[in-house]
Image (cartoon, rainbow, N blue to C red; front, side, top):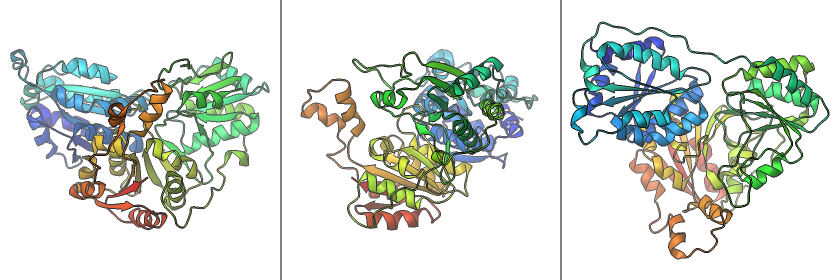
Length: 515
């Protein structure tokens, strides 16, 4: 068989089920090989940022990598932002990037670039195949690398002639690395600071915001009086009725400092000491309180679940106090004009059981998160790397991973335009995604940041760079043009009716919330 076939056979043997693709000429033999493996679901994205973001959402919800099929350096470059977000989430991902044939590279054709350099800047593992016989084994190593705990970005560069040539080689099934053991001395240190009557915080992140880990953390906090905290943006968090509440670190550094004020000891499990998102004049970058003791009990690569289990045993922690469980939220209004607070309470009331929420609502969505603590059990996915344009493709990939679960995407209008092509893929694949677009017709977060960096004197020309008006984006027309049923809501009654119907119906929908 040709080497492209051998590569896909190797990946299928290792467990590959989904290929997200925006291919070009150099990937044609890889595209043709997809036909030979009915185990693979091929999914077309109209932009590489959709492809890479969808692979991240798929990985977060399935726990395994999809393969992205990308076209040379520019294709990888177009997908870079959401590879960055996936890398920060530590999601498993395989990028198969076609390149010019080995003998063609010397001619510096228009699409020739420093592909290896681009790949290294966005990946944890990079390998360039040099012959067709190397391709199957390279695929096996890529799968292995992507699934090293907790998840890595693996990029395999495939020259076209290495894909179309024949080979009799095959790839193996290789074992990936599981979580590393924690340091027993640090476990003892964590036990000591949790029991010394100081103000202590147990700070969780990464893989350890699942229900089992949250229950163990709440038992530890109940026993010791510690507070529970977590990262501002989480890979995947289990939330809802009867699931322990863990407070996220606020986005703005001043609020984050207040959040941590008075904490004398912090024990980190699957996270690291927090820093501010950006540098600001006369403001701190490192947010942990001065003179606080920091115990890195489990890094991202270590077995944080075992760490929590060990602490529970050492403390004889078996009960969860009511203070760590979600409290009832205020009832949603029955009528009136829509505003972010109303939308938050309505989603909190109407969110279906086992929903998956992809959150990139930015300034407009601050009311949704606190209003959904006591909703029916659900999973919450966040913008881990800060590169906007992730929410729609993340929701797309999550829906492919979990076809029996409703997906709700919360998105600011500015960020949604980065990867709006996701709607077309949702329609083509008949995915159960309800996309809520908060339409404030501005990059509102930048207006806040303008003040925070001290750039106070701005005129109309500078302010025009934050405006999404003139012309306004017609969201219902745009959604319908991409095959998605679309609505505009102006009142509480509108939103209640449209949202409650949309989450129950198969197929994608778009709801514009004008605020």
